[in-house]
Image 1 (cartoon, rainbow, N blue to C red):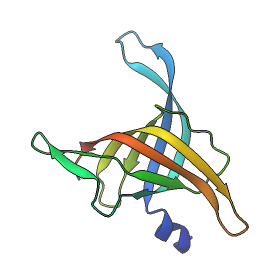
Image 2: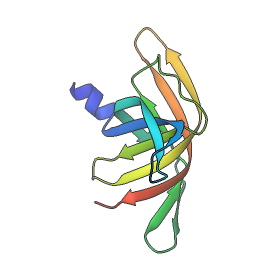
Image 3: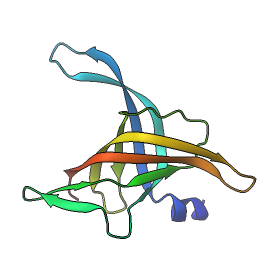
Image 4: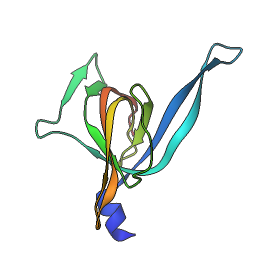
Length: 117
């Protein structure tokens, strides 16, 4: 488990729209994946400050599940090790199946901070 915490120190929820709304107009979602993940940013951070305290970035996540199917525009919620909550949109994914390593890379766009810890 210690190795998993090293590679996957964050938690993620990947949600897909049901296409339905409730009586208040809130969009409905089904969870596609809920569990550990590793949020990765490029060397430059791929982060920009927008309008005060809102950060926009375009990283990717790695999850240890290789059978998950992630679609373009699935919503990805990430909580990092400091408690910062972020919301992204999935752009594409790629699963890998190796003898010693398996998982899925999911590239993200339209990242914003929901809640600063």
